[in-house]
Length: 349
Image (tube, rainbow, N blue to C red; front, side, top):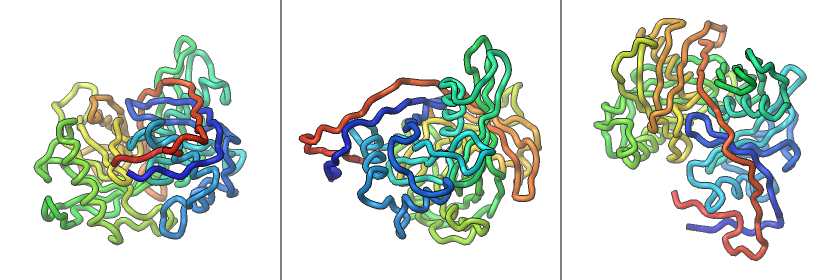
């Protein structure tokens, strides 16, 4: 455990949401300077040549302050609100987690859709729906917010196009031997495989082994051709490993799965993972397991659920939609006492 250095920062106000159990900490506009003309450029500026956050500066200080214990935890997630790339979107966001800045975040997009309506940034009817357009590092995405009786009831995330880059890609892991994974891009790159292929199941009891497996699969795929995104090299490299198994058939879905997504350096998504679900849809479609328009019932490690479907096609891949719920959990002011020896906090994992 190495505490982060102290900072002159006094306080940061945030609004917290959760999407199907996965946290999303919203840092309002103007809290910290986020340089760059587009969200993708802002992420590139935030990262150094090694792909890790640049040390020093208010942006990195706030990321550490809000992610690390005692104010956060190893699986915390959030984003800095930014202006959109142009007038076609309502807002932009630079996503962050304990290890840095991500290219995509479906659950965060859903939380931001709910927040934009709940906060009044985007006007919405008491009955009906409204589309919130959000610029993220991987492109422009949408959150379709459904309302009833003056309350937000659900949010549907329409992602950038998803595509499969490789099926049955063989990788060798240190502890699980040679395994085959499917690789798909959906704003971020995911490796998808049955948990049973590693002798595991996506359950809370198996989390230590699932984290170990996710880290090893991700490491084994480093530099693999299937993980490269030729249209934008900044989106290359495996971000998450989604390990799934089959659930009993349901009358309201064509297919039911449960999964755990291990992303970044050993973080576990409590939700079924928004952009990971998009990648999973692309894999299931490519393998002939799910028809276009058919509903996927996708459960998380905690039992929360997204429903998802392929809504169409685009030149770059499949258009996917993922639906779930997002709820506000609190409004917080986080402070940093200059006399606090732990500074912006610490990470135990």
